Length: 432
Image (cartoon, rainbow, N blue to C red; front, side):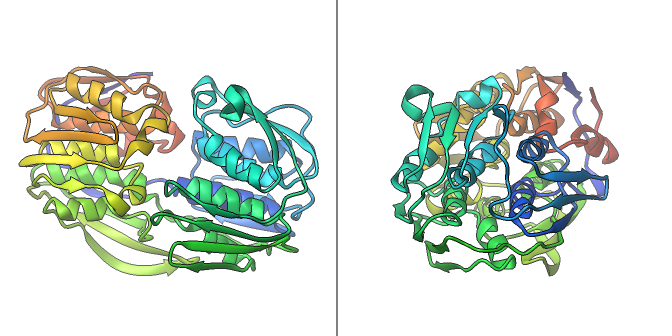
């Protein structure tokens, strides 16, 4: 599927964006471990979360899907059944990494596989620390790449000093800690998303977090069922935030956005570049902070971004790069080598596709350098199967002179079904 975008005038109106992908994944898995049914409202009905639903069903979990809510009939910590075929995670790295931790604790054999894109992604960042807990996991490339074969059971608590701040790795190990004998300790080098810790506590599991050290005692006995409402995804809102900042005379309101501090790195990066996103109506929902965001055009300046900011906006660097092309001066992104092992090598693919549009962008081993402001020109570009790159290129098309066509744009539905329709509701000319 291709997405064709024409240059746009201002974006004006009020929108909501889909539910948070990270929270939807975790709500599904923890609900499946609970003793009884849980209801998940506001969930993301995207390809990655559908993959998680399919994986849970393969292990005997009943998941009812309605437009307004998911109903997950939890079977308890030890009620999952051995799947009778490899479990297909499709393109979802979150699904595979989090399930690896849970399946390492289950007393049965399982295989995690997925589409070709996912089978290329490294999994040793979870398989190696799981092995120190006694997990028996095999995979291609010396256990580094999927498919992963897991013979679960017999885990022992361990202390893990993570080399890179990663919410997926931290969550995988804390979930494995539910089944391990003794204490599982995860020490991060910097802050990462804390949804797993919040949601475990809400279900009655004692997770202690002190600064960057997180401890869970196992084995756990019980997870309480819990009805939750998923906030709108800050990572999906990011594309419209940047579009409204860059398109003159825009006035945009995005409702009910999750503003967990571990997820709002993009807002801090934009602030460092001179822009302010107004947050109104702050409130708490199921342990997660929410707010409505008001965005109007503002001038940007180049900045140097790295350090502890990186894990707080790891999914927003493609759209941040677009903002940097319109900023006055040079923007340098460092400490973001993690981008090379996302859905694609997000550094190389971002540089290649943004260059087609006329951006002055150069790769670094751990990031990129962008000089601006640069006028963009319409072009034929490719998502490379990466939903966040695909959406970034579509927003770039709103700014460019002439028509932009994003090839292989079907992947956008992995995290933002209805993306094109939402753009059109604000006045943009987008065709599929």
